[in-house]
Length: 303
Image (cartoon, rainbow, N blue to C red; front, side, top):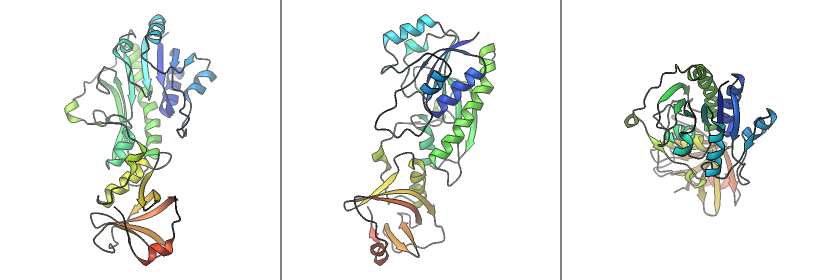
């Protein structure tokens, strides 16, 4: 029987671990993360799935700890898989499986290598992304591609909505590629990294809106970090406004030449740096009261 050690987290981890079990791969060990106390946990638990299926599961602080490397070496797995595990696996780990180490990445590699690829694809205004199964090498998301599938991004899709589609597609890509991997007949296509891109992680502060940018860019940022992610925000005095949902208003004229926020005809609007207008469909005020009357009287300058 084919054996594997699986590093996994999040919804993609749950779905892809399920694919391995459904195709009768014997999972010798599951390595996952402890949920962080300060993080909003809106996704499924790999640890719960592993325990429900009677699989040995651990949550080490350091995946590359020599003791863990020795433990996996003793298991002598055929494969090592990483499904949305958050830490880089070092060369010692990658060298252990007899038949290779493979990662499931949430983009159409070589585009959007690196962290939070779904969020970045939405923020950058892409109209498609995808899921890619690839060989793991020391350089992140750089190994040969076993299989990939595109996922459309609608103009109003949030990152969470796209991530749900990517999760379904990730399971499909793995299920389709797994028989070839097991049989030793899978075709591996090298990546041309010169045709791709690399993006780093994001912090809540990165959601600050730059109103000097175009309405489309602001709209894409709002979609890319909308809840359950921390959300886009702007500050007016001591008040922070989380802008959670917007809509482009191509036929609406701005109030004046400078970016600003105002209330008109029952809705909040924002004039952006390109002279285009956004309707603010969902706003959350923190540290103050959002009074429509105050915003109706004049346009509040936003920087």
